[in-house]
Image 1 (cartoon, rainbow, N blue to C red):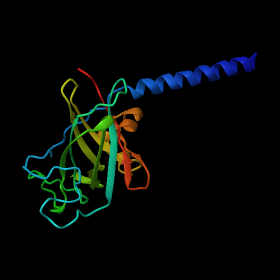
Image 2 (cartoon, one colour):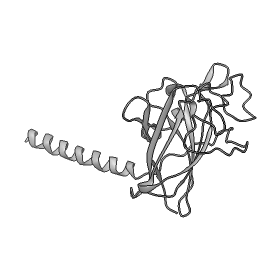
Image 3 (cartoon, rainbow, N blue to C red):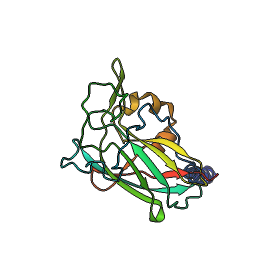
Image 4 (cartoon, helix red, strand yellow):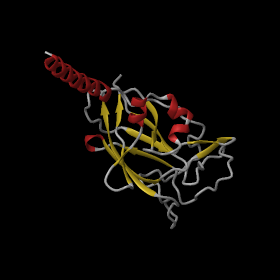
Length: 207
């Protein structure tokens, strides 16, 4: 009898886990604040390679990475033609923004801002560098992250941030710590392929 109860409990636990995972997968990607440094300086080059700036011969400093992913709706159908507006700090933790007054250097070979579209099966890809942490004040830093604005007619606009797995500053970051463990997992990229490739899927909600 005890064995039957144990087996029954194990089966029910497994089913519950599958159901819970399915429900979580259909939830929209958690929202996050825009932050103070959304780009306001016009720039012509907004393509998917942030490591180079059109008209310049140099390459951005820092660890070059590739981020790829897919955009889905809450029924897990791929969504094509989504505008993905993304921006971030350079490798030194400096935003290319007039209101960023930190002493960190500006990297003139770093594009800093891109506007791309999701293509076939909702797929997107861009090349960039790992952003540096930027200072918040006395002995505080924001953990490295990339900002996203996601939009398409017929869908709820999404403003979020992508975090990096196992970064030591994640545990100290005020915004990251406010999220539940499940939300943190859905906002954190996964390592794909070699150490310089990341997978980051996004779920948006229909209006």
